[in-house]
Amino acid sequence: MFSTAHAFSGFSVDDVDAARTFYRDTLGLRVQDNPMGFLTLELEGGGRVLVYGKEEHTPATFTILNFPVSDLEAAVDELNSRGVQTKIYDDSEFPTDSKGIMRESEGPGIAWFRDPAGNVLAVLDEEPERSS
Image (cartoon, rainbow, N blue to C red; front, side, top):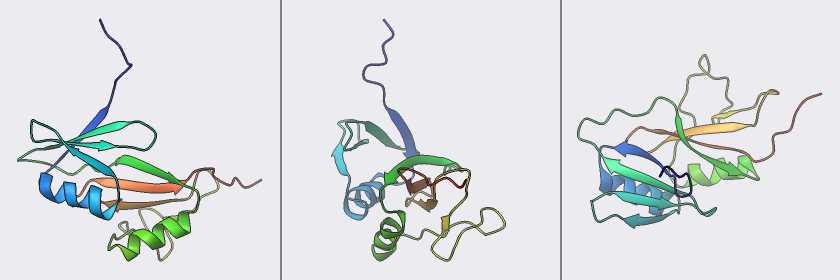
């Protein structure tokens, strides 16, 4: 019978070992090796994400994983100090500041970055400040 109780998301990478190092060591996530050679990212809120290798991987051109943070500026500074580049878009695509943070009155502040496979991830304000 169909059930949503244990649903999870997944995405591909071109190098599982590089993904393990990035998600575990650079981002600090709990990463478990799957018996099939995949990875499981265990998120603090109880969610899980499957990461699987794919020979002809094509990086996602959209955000596949979002990390809400209470202090966006501090999160970006920390990612940058770990070697993660957060200014990945040209300002004609998305108007961002020098750190790669886009601040719009319509939504949360957000900064995008890529994993080693080129997939797009983001940190964003937990509670966006809205302009009146």
